[in-house]
Length: 99
Image 1 (tube, rainbow, N blue to C red):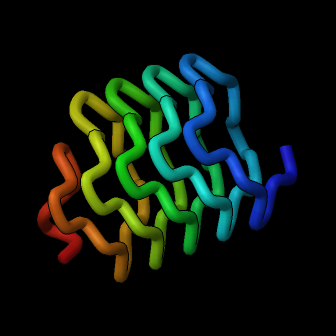
Image 2 (tube, rainbow, N blue to C red):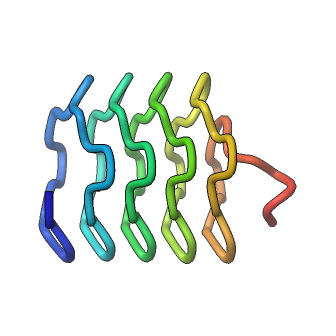
């Protein structure tokens, strides 16, 4: 999926198959991405404020410079994911070692 800069605000994408998707700069405020497959997805500069990614597969996802404020990443698989320069204020389950 090519969705750079797309608006997915409050979208229900639970369990969606989004491997290798290009969502850089997408607006995902309050989006439901529980158990979604986001492996290798480009989410750099994406706005995920208040989004729920609980139990999502984020392996090798690119989240550099994204906004994860108040997002829920509990139970996610984050192996080799990149969170460089992401805003993690109030985020649950975010890797604190990337601050």
